[in-house]
Length: 269
Ligand code: PYL
Image (cartoon, rainbow, N blue to C red; front, side, top):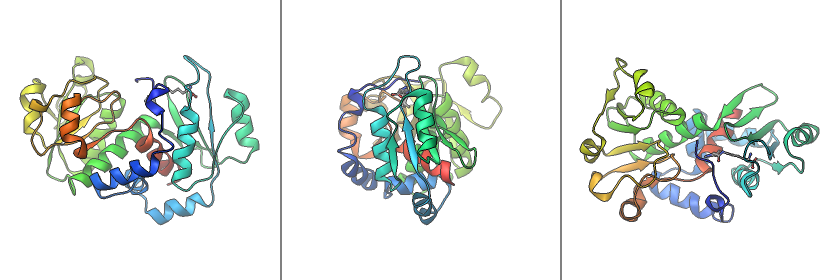
């Protein structure tokens, strides 16, 4: 998992409304609606939960430590979606104890390996990778006005790509997969998933792409179908600057927003 930097999160809180408008222009859905589609719940259920849950975000010093602005960015997304959110003053165990003492029903926290939302009332724990996958597939599904019967290329069969494939299957998409790691690929053989071996040869054939790889700037303009829609949960973005400039109105990519929103909706469903 690529570790975010302070720069990745710069301005996120201040630009949430502009980001949401951009998302609606690309998908026809708001961030909240995409989160609800990822969790399979109605928006009124989500808003009802907003009135009966208190969320804490706890900074965690493990591993490479605190990312400046990470907990604050997570809290701002949660508040933007209508839930009361606090960032604990304390870190780690102290922060978790503060959250429980503060009446938290949902706690968000991340080390370098996992980012979770834990619903203390139900015991449900949502992983960011799974939520991000479902959120980005929901966004692509909206862009395509339904992916049933559509050819979709998934790049990368890591934690995000694997959940994306499962959700795409539920939606009835025709799934093709490109994965460099033979061990990761092994599990998908004989599953009905079409395995692609030459990425740059087939990329121009796909109108729908999920880039779930951490590879930077490997998809160029020449590699893309003229009508391509790209949902890119992978960090950093896999499109070159030139490809992004041309396709940006059909590219879904953010450092945290869709993943956190989907974690929240999946934690309260
Ligand atoms: C959850 C993000 C999405 C992409 N990469 C993941 C990442 O950067 N993980 C590390 C998060 C560390 C947070 C740090 C803090 O500030 O609490 N422990």
